[in-house]
Image (tube, rainbow, N blue to C red; front, side, top):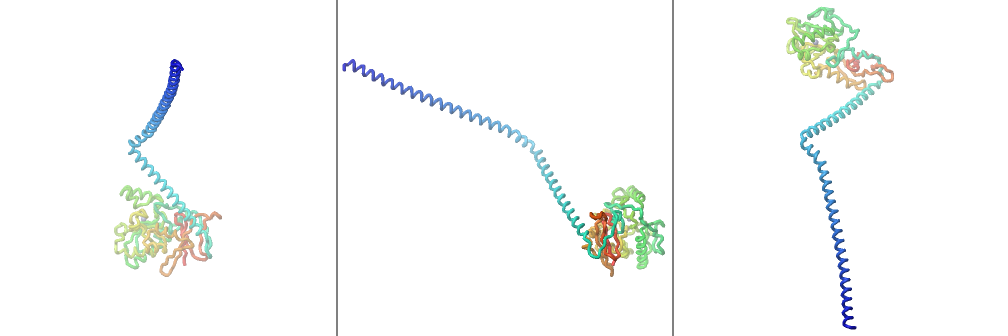
Length: 381
Ligand SMILES: [Zn+2]
């Protein structure tokens, strides 16, 4: 090989080496460029994603924060809304409780009626009318239960009684016959026991018109409050029934008073003749009438005796009798005599459509309406 040939060979090797080097460099440069551009695009994507999520969070906060701020600024109103909501929740609960109580009450009533519908042995059914609920001596007449004026109200003049040791404010005073008879006997016994002669019978039966006039007069003279707590509006006065009387002193014309020692026998024994002091002082919350020392109501001997002994008012006593049906009667013993009483509902038998009251066969019974919804049966011995 000549020197020239050698030189050519070396040059060609060098050229090849340079070409290889250049090729490798180009490949490396390409790899680097590709790597950088890939990394760059990844970075850009990531930034974009971050920006998007930031925007999303910002948007979310915007929607959340706006009402939150409103709630904060309206917090007092919010509280009242909340308390309003709990009040209406309470109302709902109360309504539910009331419904439950009413259902239980209805169920109880139904059970009571079913029980009463079973007739014991030796009893027969006596047919009554709806009007009969508003007749009889055990009627409750008060601010709630109005007196029903009936055409066959039988009244008699107390003046017709013979030889009384008491005075009448008028010869026209009328009462039911039983009331007039019993009052005459009571005042006669009082005189026989004590020799007291100063009783004045002020009144008895009062018509609807008289009641209206009296209420107006009391209201005008002593104010509405007095009239409301002392005088019954027309229809609600016991005087309409002819079974009530007001008593006074003949000497002064004023109402009698319980504190008067000369009258202690009278107050203790009125019940023996079937009379009750209708508006006692401690029963005002129930009767809704303030103490009236002078107003007596005829209810018959067994009821009056029991009411006096137990210190009840008529409202309480009627409630008590309502608890006793024919299966579970109530007994009142007066002296040697035991009366049996029970309540009978006044609704018609669903099968016959008739109002029927069970009574013991062959016994003397008195059936009185309660003026509410049914009857009180008193079986005489
Ligand atoms: Zn009266």
